[in-house]
Image (spheres, rainbow, N blue to C red):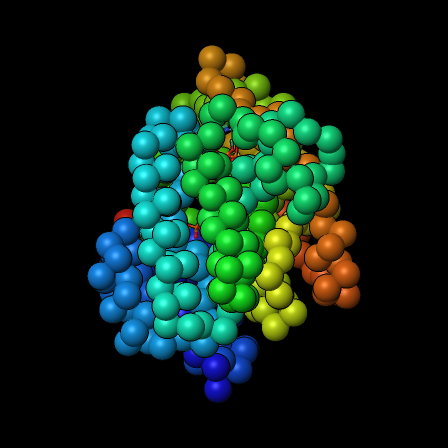
Length: 308
Ligand code: NAP
Ligand code: GDP
């Protein structure tokens, strides 16, 4: 049986892999920063030498929503460059058969044509709000290709849209829009105050439920060969739509206000899933209201312990 090392397994996507892994015939090894700090080469090498993985699914990263990307650019650049450098180097050195890295549709050019496809990643600068994170991720894609070309490795990149689900980071300041707004709506209802949504509410996003993403990565793992693949739903929702879906879960729709003094970020990042559809015939995604319902339930059930 092949051994798969999952880095970043305590996070949003890593927790989804832990949940779905019993359905797949691999020996999964889940690592977190307490097993190895991946910004440290010696610790990373030790982890790879102990696990001796056939495959690596590299999730670990310094991650956050729009406002973390704007306020912590040095961390987003340095930590991600260091982690990715060490992981790819060690994947090569212990001769893994396959390594799958995770990029994001938010690292594509700001000024572009839609829909975005896999060929367009380096066609122009990213949006200024997340340029540090975006360039660190883009370098990982260049790095994968460099290893493939020079050393004939089999490194690929999955490019998901905005991800949400149980075990997300529900931080009010640093989280992505869905977990942050779940936490904000929860507090607003508790304190009987307005539910404040940052920005105009107009920007459009595609959202993918974390377990759908994990299943899709597992279902196309054997098919991936030295390539980039966007993993996206087809539907696009405005931030306003999402805020209403969240407020509905708390029966608090009457109290939403949009705080336009906050940044909107990139207006949209509409991505194509045509390549994905050619790999997986019957693509299925959870409905967004159901996905939000499960994310709200997780937050309420784990309020004292969850990341926030
Ligand atoms: P997350 O919930 O923030 O989890 C990040 C994971 O990385 C955690 O398990 C964390 O481990 C680990 N990690 C961070 N720094 C580390 C270090 N120095 N050494 C070892 N492990 C470290 O992130 P996520 O949302 O699951 O994201 C997974 C991947 O998807 C990332 O590559 C991210 O860039 C990408 N992505 C995310 C989104 C999104 O909307 N969330 C969208 C597109 C792409 P500890 O808990 O032990 O620190
Ligand atoms: P992005 O999809 O990479 O831009 O990241 P986010 O998940 O952080 O989504 C950002 C969008 O949601 C922007 O248009 C924000 O103005 C909007 N938004 C509204 N309220 C919040 C909030 O509380 N946190 C975050 N992160 N975004 C918010």
